[in-house]
Every structure is written in structure tokens, then in C-alpha cells.
Length: 478
Image (cartoon, rainbow, N blue to C red; front, side, top):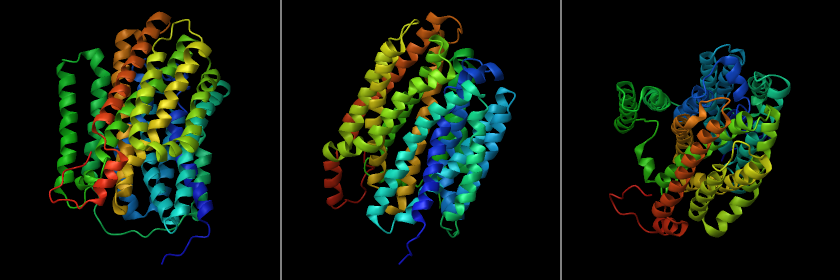
């Protein structure tokens, strides 16, 4: 019987802080984007790489981070992740050119991909002795995510308005060093023997990056151009190679048997479409507030606070209770459809819009949809997994959210640029471009809601299936 760690709640503070910072890293740069664009020379279409460089690497390497955590030891990988995150933050803060900035964000993504799965592993080790304590710890750890998103929006505005955009990266240096000093509170996990699927990790990350690059470049060089076709073909080949590798090696990053977990497939599809709708909305809403309405960085951050506070309240206090009453499927489908409604409302913003009339109500509706759908989708992906595959299921659903975010942002940026979002200073053209992106995101969210209703099994169906003896040759469950 394992000994209960007497410092486990202090250790949880360290792990929750890590979750807080990893999520904050995706939100803090939003309001700083226009200032970074001016200083570093990003074009309007290239600006998305400040965000996508992080999420592509983070999402592509999450499974590798989880595997390394299992083999090398979760505490060691957690420490290594923070060291890499600090290095990436230094590079991003010191950048004088666009490509150095992108490189810094990619290094931060590597750090995040090491921190997130190792933190989850450590949490399970600390609290798995008591299901009640584990539930409390998971709730506190989960609350750190929306809190990080809220803090990122606010601090991004404060730093950019009164200091400089570099501070959205500098802040990670002292926090990272303090976290490293506090890792002595974490349990030491023994390493074990096994192989690491480096080739699979490279294939999936390179395939995703090449696909996003092709979509970003396509409006400039043409969707039917030789370059675009070759890039998309190369991305497809790399992703197919990833699945071939997973099927053929003894210790893959993602054993394909995991897809037999009930609802893992349908939950990951929903999560992909949720990321593809939500992140572009957040991205283009930042640009609309600053480039069309003329908000400063702090005003823009403050304008997004009601939305992020609503997210935090619903995710931590309301959605879980609703899930117990109505089940996951209605919340996921309903949340995606509510998100679509909020996005359609946002698409009506005029060039001379008012925040209180045109932005605030629509953004709150969109945030309500996100808060209803996100946690049930995550829980649906993980709830049917056996203990030995729970970490893998968590890594997969986090990966698909980031994949959806990157591809959705790339595709909708292409749509927005083609409709006028590249015409800085031309407020009607900019608004038309941003509105087209909101409509595209609404379509993605609506498709997600409808597909969830059609293909996802209900809680009752999953429970009945689990109680019945499984026949041989059982197919992957939706």
C-alpha cells in the first residue's frame, strides 16, 4: 500500500500553477498582437503564427510528453518542461524579428507539451489513494485552466498598455524559476525501461505544421497551385505515416486500441470542431476591438473579461452539475449550437459598432456555449478509458483541441483575408473580413453540434454497453 504524501495539497498548488500558466500562454498574447505586429513586421495574415507556433508544437508533442513522463519520470519531465518554457520565454521576449518570435513561441510549445502531461501524472500519483480527494484535486486543477485564461486576457492588456508587449513573455521567467524551486514538494517518480517513438512524434507534428502552412499560404499562391497541392499532399503523407508507425511498432505513442474506448472518437471530433470555432472567434474578436473599434490593449483585455469570467464560473460551478442531471451528449451538442448562435450574432458587428450593444451580449452567448461543451467533451473522452489508458485518452483529446484550433485559425484567416481583413485602416473592409471569419466559425460549431447529436452515444447507452458482455471483434465505439 502506497504512503500518503503529507505535502500533497502544497504539491497540488504547484501543479495547478503549472496548468494556470500553460493555459495563460494561449490567452495572454491575444491583446498584444497588434503591438507585436507593428514592432516585428508581421503581415495581417502572418500574425496568426504567433498563436499557431505554440499550439501546433504543444498539440503535436503532447503524446510524446506523456510517454517521456512515463519512462523518464514525471517529476524530471515537469522540471525539464519548465526549463524549456523559460528558455522559450526569453527568446520570445528578446525577439527583434518575426521569425525569431515564432521560434520562441515554438520553444514555449515544447515546454508546455512536457509540463501538461507530467503534471497530470503527478496529480494522479498524489491523490489516487482516495477517490474523494482525487475528485477535489481534479476540480481545483481544472479550475486553474479558466482562471489562467482570464488572467491572461487581463494581464496581456495591462502589460501591453503600460509596459511593453515583451512583458507577456518576461512574466514567465520569475514564475518559472519559482516553480522550479518548489518542485521539491513533488513526489519523485522512478524511471522505467521502454522505447520512445520519436519518429511518430516528428511525423505528427511536422504533418500538422505543414498542413497549417499550406492553408495559410494558399490565398496568396492559389489553392490550385503546385506548391499548395504538394504541401497538402506532404502533410497527408506525414499524418498517414504517423498512423502506420503507431500500428507497426511495439510501444507506440498512441496505441490504436485506445479508440475502442466508448465515445473517444465522437468526443475528439467534437473537441476538434470546438477548438476550430472558439479560437478563431477569440483571435478575430481581439483584432476587431483594436483595429476597428480603436480600443487600446488594456481596454481590449478588459472588454474580454466578462466573457472569460463567465467561462470560469460555468466551468467550475455549473456545468458539472448540469452534466449529472442531463448527461454529456445534450450539453456538448447544445453548447456547440449556442456557440454557433453567439458567433452569428458577432458576425453582425458594424464598422462603427458599440462594445455594449454589438460585442458584449454576443460574446457572452458564445462563452456560454463554450462553457457548456468543453468539460463534458473532455469527460466523455476520458470516462470510458481504463486506468492504464486514462492519461493517453487525456493527451489525445488535448491534442485534438489544439489541432482543431490551429487548422481552424489557419482556414478562417484565409477566409478573412480574402474578404478584406488584410486592408488595415479600411474599417468597412476589415469588418467584412472579420465577420466572414465569425460566420465560418459559426458553421464549424453548428456542424459540431449536429454531428454530436447524430453520432455520439448517450450516457445510458454507454452504461448499458459497459454492462453487457463485449463480443469478439467489437468495433471502435463512437
